[in-house]
Image 1 (cartoon, one colour):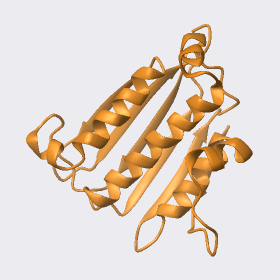
Image 2 (image 1 turned 180 degrees about the horizontal axis):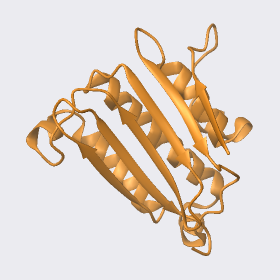
Image 3 (image 1 turned 60 degrees about the horizontal axis):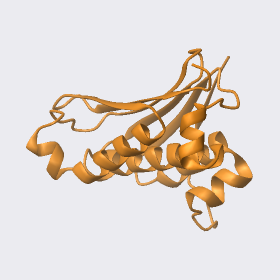
Image 4 (image 1 turned 60 degrees about the vertical axis):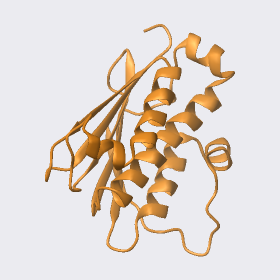
Length: 168
């Protein structure tokens, strides 16, 4: 089961924070709204899901963070930072956010862009959002997951985050 949404800017509505969006709308709709915020000035952000259902997060991560809502907010913040980096540093025009729930052991989140790309771990990356990358990695690790960056100059970038489900 797949669905895709090409987002458009939220017109006339104030931009809400992660908790203000995730609590009332849930993670998927909050990410769709975020994609709309970033879809402007020649930038198009799409959201696609594969078998996305209510998440069953790793119990240890839930206990560390306090609740599943905080986990969803952390995922939202990872997406937000990745979108910001793709536009600000990579000068991307097309970005795709993918939530893949088809794996039985983890949620796979990926954010891919058509930007300028870089060599992961290089000084160039440090200058172009190193703190943001570090923060995204720390958030993923706090959730018991991992973050991987795939990129090359002129080929855009993909941020992949794996977050374990409960009992996985």
